[in-house]
Length: 250
Ligand code: PEP
Image (tube, rainbow, N blue to C red):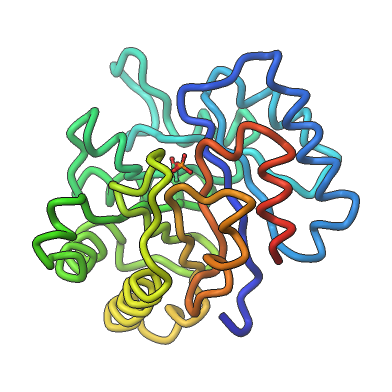
């Protein structure tokens, strides 16, 4: 989108140990060696790795992020991690409302909304994920679902500085399947329109990422679609060669 610097973001999910930090370093070095001219980069890692990931990436243009946060700042929530804790560990951003959180942990739009506000409270960028299931797509409900998720998950105070939207069709995540170019274009145009209706003029500068089976071989096709301002990459973010290959599509 004119005037928007692309963002290539990774999501390591429940993958990675200290042995994976060399991949992260290679990603950092790849962006330092010139890819940063094309796009911003963010790798969201498990909380156990975040502090070391942030250290590893410190002298590179690549930022480290979290994969989820609790809505509260602290308290009696065993096993949960607050946005403030992610910030303290070196995160710049946090993913909220990933479909795996919505499915595995029953997160509703209201929960995702609260988590996005928690991210801002801590000074993090919120990467808010939305997307339809296979049944919803087959039922012709995709655009309605996206409207409902934007209405429920994206707080009114969202700005292009504090918020990134990731469109991730649930059926395309980790499956090797991707929507057609026309379907991606339709979804992203719809998201832009709904954001404009909700947020006004600032929606024209908000990044809308595509996520779901992005890899080096399909990146240039997906990333050149109108209103696609970058990618959220799961599996292919675990290997530096793949992640860098995606960014090279720019
Ligand atoms: C994701 O987890 O956000 C994702 C898009 O995964 P994958 O790239 O593996 O489909």
